Length: 458
Image 1 (cartoon, rainbow, N blue to C red):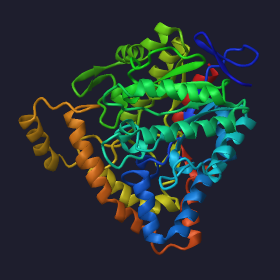
Image 2 (image 1 turned 30 degrees about the vertical axis):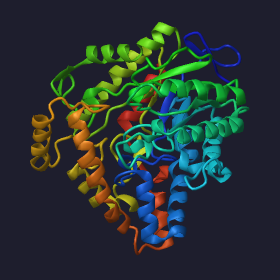
Image 3 (image 1 turned 45 degrees about the vertical axis):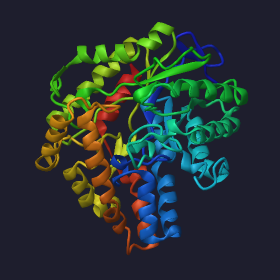
């Protein structure tokens, strides 16, 4: 049943309130390094694998991975847990190529259509999330960015392509009632803050001309935390916040306790949530947390604290009748409800490589910011001493230095090593690697599934 915004709630066509709660399908149509175990950014990884084993065999692996990563059993698991929503991130490269801009690839919709259909059959809504745009809308790997420059905001050409792409997407899904709506730009990072607002004005107008009925889910600037860029409250729109807890990061400290010199407890979570949702509450629009969730370490004591963070956040969301989409559904063991089995073909093949990435802190999301401290500490000290006023967008000098050295330079240097692990494999072995992500081949993080199920039943 088609959803729409009514005051501070989403309602269906009968006027019944609907609180969207579910997961993000990260690492699928927008692959991310920490989710499936590769280094650097998706386009760089795919190019390296193609160079290693050829175009046809690389396509065999990647297409099979998309098929295996989410199927009927996955949709059944989410439905059984009581979820009614999946946020589906996708990369623009599935629908358009850089060498043929403005030409929509109809073939690229096939997996998106399939999963939307699987979810709809079970009464689960989809939120379509353009997670990586031409030129990259933020400074990090998850927008398929091989640099630290969000060029999307610098070039009208890239913006024109996204408007055109969304017109095609909206035309395709405008009559689909179980598409809850469109999340046009994930976590924008416009350093000036001057381009994103006018771009949203333009995009909203273009989308409404094609599909006036579907809800828009719009992220704030600076990774969905800054809503001052919105110059008006658009009709039938949800303004999406992301609410990761400081203590829940890989570098997070004890909970309750100190992380990076800041005391984090339940009161801290409340204050952070209230700050990040102030715009929604002031404008009387629905609250929807498009991403949140701690990472897990394998240490029972630490992970128990991470589950407590999640429990506290869910209680806070309940108190405000906020919807949410937990990040993320499936991965290689850091955060997902389910993960590839360590004894399965993929992690047997790539486990040692992933361990090396972890040792080097090459993945931003999995890094404790302490790896290779003997090498990087002098560089951090140099930057602090020589450039004490340097405060680059979005997170300052310490993060920028780590990003440039660890998460770009070191990560890209690892690409040939990852791709080489595909060499010498038969077609059947490539298929087995991809099928390691099919649900029957995965292990389930039962405490997490039980926690979510209990909350949704409450």
